[in-house]
Amino acid sequence: MKKSAFAIILLASALFCYAQKAVLVSGEYCYYVAENISITDAKKFAIERARNEAMAKEFGIIVSQTNTRKSIDIDGKAETEFVSMGSTESKGIWLGDTKEPEVKVFYENDGLVVIAKVEGRAREIRNAETELSIMLLCNDVENERFKNNDRFSVCFKSATKGFVAIFLSDELCETYYCLLPYENEQGEVRAVKGNTEYVFLSTKDPNYPFEEETILVTDKILEYNTITFVFSKNQFNIPLSEMGTFVPEIPADKFKEWLRKNRINDETMQVVEKTIEIRKK
Image 1 (cartoon, rainbow, N blue to C red):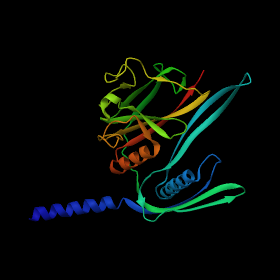
Image 2: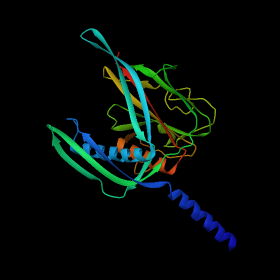
Image 3: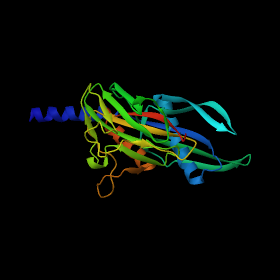
Image 4: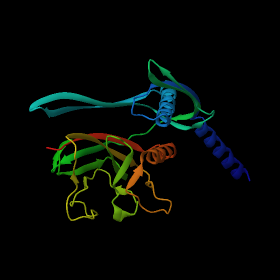
């Protein structure tokens, strides 16, 4: 009986320590809405950014930035400029609202403005990060700039064993496409050994289900895609259909919610984003 009582005390202490990780935060964000954005989408964006601001005040921020040289032919002349694609995110995970978000919508100087105020509970992200080596390959050479019909593959290595999945989203970020696992892997994320080099999305991968290599295509003069890598020391499941089957295309809202829940429950999960450029010529 004494042993059982002692075990219960230890369990209660562990649960209390875990609960201490969640803190009450609040924030506000003012969004000046672009002409092509609907009011519904503007409200969602303002609420999301207000949550991010609330967590940033409490936990700090993570800044990522990619600088890309962009060259376009205009009337026979080559115009070159540098495009900076960056993001600022908090070091926190939003666990849920404690109050319904307050949203105000009004017009100012002939423009639509949305102000969102939020309050909720959040937890700091304290990942014991695993060293990852990720190289994007264009025709088997490391490069993040591609032309239409160039071959695309990924060279991946982690310092420890774990599990990895890869997703792609275009400039609109409305849909995430699952690149790894492949369709023949039924949603089972790929297990990897530590300090072992893998080449994914290529016929060099024994599990690759196609006879031809992965090709990137575009019908635009120039476009940017984002490649998202999700790695964890623990096995995880990718978003599945309501029937529990593999779905290669995932709506952005569903993908972000899936990622949020996984990061809440798995402190070893890491997310790495890389931007690629694809030219028509």
